[in-house]
Amino acid sequence: MHVFVTGGSGLTGPAVVTELIAAGHTVTGLARSDPAAARLESLGATPYRGSLDDLDRLREGAAAADGVLHMAFGGDFADPDEMMRRDLAAIETLGQPLTGSGQPFVVTSGTLVLPAGRERTEKDETDRAGIAPFRIPGEQACLALAAEGVRPSVVRLAPTVHGPGDHGFIGMLVTTARQTGVSAYIGDGANRWPAVHRLDAAVLFRLALEQAPAGSVLHGAGESGVPFRAIAETIGRGLGLPVVSLTPEAAAGHFASPFVARAYGTDAPVSSAWTQQLLGWSPVHPTLLEDIERGDYLHPADPALSPERPSR
Image 1 (cartoon, one colour):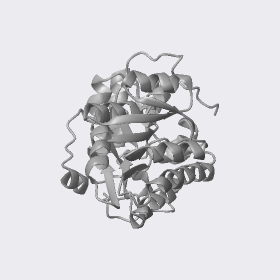
Image 2 (tube, one colour; image 1 turned 180 degrees about the vertical axis):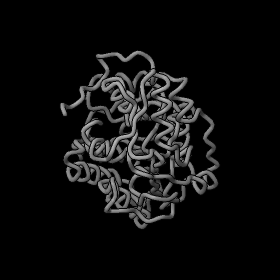
Image 3 (cartoon, rainbow, N blue to C red; image 1 turned 120 degrees about the vertical axis):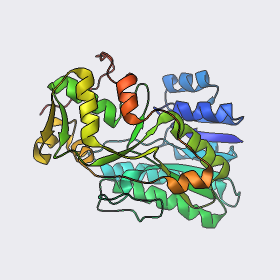
Image 4 (cartoon, rainbow, N blue to C red; image 1 turned 30 degrees about the vertical axis):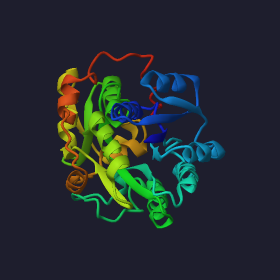
């Protein structure tokens, strides 16, 4: 299969591109910069210059492929409406050339679109009042293409996709601990976070392209819910720092942004049992806590790679 991929040069994308090529697929990847193009070439993919805002280029890239995998997502969390608009426009544009083809179209979302408070499944309804409503319109636009002769599916990734070089939620948590001298959690820290290793997520994306029935919603979670206090304690132990509890009000100023603080305090466990049964997906790589202990999260920080933390 010739797959057109967006986000192939990002954090999770290279693992996905590598997985696809190893399985015998060919990959063309959207690249908005010279470094992104070079990264894709080094993985064995063909760079395709453009950006998510260049809708003509997106349409042409999708039209030349046998399947599309959309992973790119970006913008400023201070303006979620703009992030939603860009993502929705990209999904609608990528889906247009696939109409009537029966070809696969896999779109990335996140499990934080679901209501908090108890373990959610692939069949649960999304929560527009929750922490990530800006992902929901894209999901709906993708799944609606099933009625247009496309084979669409949505992969909801856990908020933590862990692995080497991670600068997402866990990477930011470690950076904050280094900068503030404490490893913090919110309240009693009993809130649960799902997690998935990057290499397990890559296999899931490949299986979704190859097998997922039209209209499938899939959960990319190797662990249904890791207590956040256990995450903070593992970081604190590894860095030799005290572990402290923060109130939600204090957390808003302690962490990288109020959005990040809200995410860290959310109880968001999910099940991936249906996904695993449907596709034969079996996560086998290290757990989140194992990865924090044994991976590169706790290695000495490289100042050139550490994002600047906003002033309080």
